[in-house]
Amino acid sequence: MAKNWLNLFVKSDEPEEQQAQPSSASDNFSFPVNNVPSNTFNPPPANISANAHALTPAVKEVIEVYEKGLDSINMPGYDFYEFYRTIYATGIVNGEQVYTMAYQMARTLDNTVTTQKLLKDAEFYISKINEVHGQYSSQGQQKMYAIQNDKTAEKSKLTSAIEAANRRKMDLENELRLLEVDIKSKQDELTKIDGKYVNQEETIKEKLTANDFAHKEMINKLNGVKTGITQFIKN
Image (cartoon, rainbow, N blue to C red):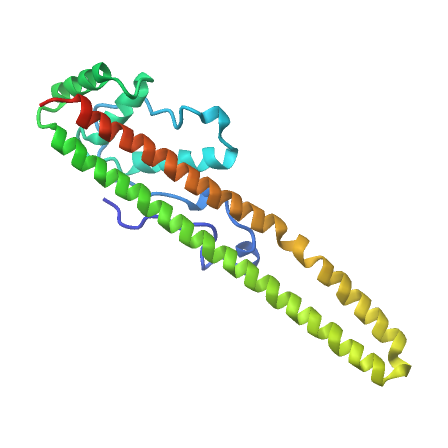
């Protein structure tokens, strides 16, 4: 199983001008590639959400990343992930008959499958979702802090320049006209600072919100199947 999980937003070795623009989740938000052979049993992919039509594009994007990430770390053989996909492929995720039939099919494909094994595997996949969510949130916050620091520093620099120019205006009347032009120019720049960063801030806020929402969706789905196993499968 690959150990390196993901690089979120902007990589540290990218040029500065590229770092100023957050990348999309699909570019930098990724699970490790799973190099083990694929399973012979390949159920249809699970629907990302029962309420997919109500999700924002950002949430859909992150949920898709979570889904693809789970697929990339799918352990060899028949395990909880195949069971999870089978359950969601039916469109009925909370029924005893569905769980019983899915479990019987699992046992037919692999007689080593047990309820205990499925539950243990479920914990593995849930832990990976939690791990990615935490890294996404941490790096997103770091990027937000960096942008806010840049904005504060730039504002402070321009504000100081304006104050210095005003002091010189009072002391040097003969430079009044040039100083007024200089002040006006810097004030214009100052008024543009918020607008300069607003798109970057909103993009990151949206992705952080999407990350939290997608995490909740995935955990609810995984825990739902886990609960279903405990509730409906009798060994």
